[in-house]
Length: 185
Image (tube, rainbow, N blue to C red; front, side, top):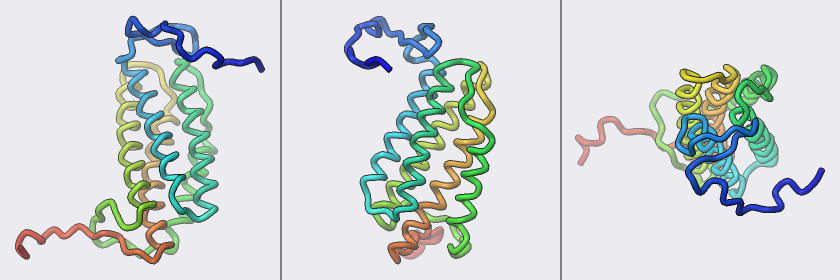
């Protein structure tokens, strides 16, 4: 393979457009680029999470998720192209079951927090939800794979469970939302 990114400053986007994977050019603020950008932000946030102290199995899972998110970005950059498969969704569902298995059932809402790793995972979950909304908006107006929406939906669930799991591994408690705290002031 040649040097695909040997020249970073191309100046081709100075007019407010950017190139898609199929060679077409679109405005940098179009819904497809908004969705791509949100998936990129999600991948970046998982990269930040990977700088925290994590169990090795979680680290490996998150790295695999980063690769899948890059695949998803490839899908979004070429209308009609599909890289994700139903096995990607099934894999996330299996991890959801695995990591949720030993967690105490929730009786209340929880706030993002606990350990640094859990808080970073909650932040990634919020970004994942935004990416999902952007992909849904795009799919309402343009061709996208339904697996893209499903993947992001399952991933946000998994990031929530992983946040709780990371607190559990560190023997830290989830931060419980206190609905009646105003009366205690």
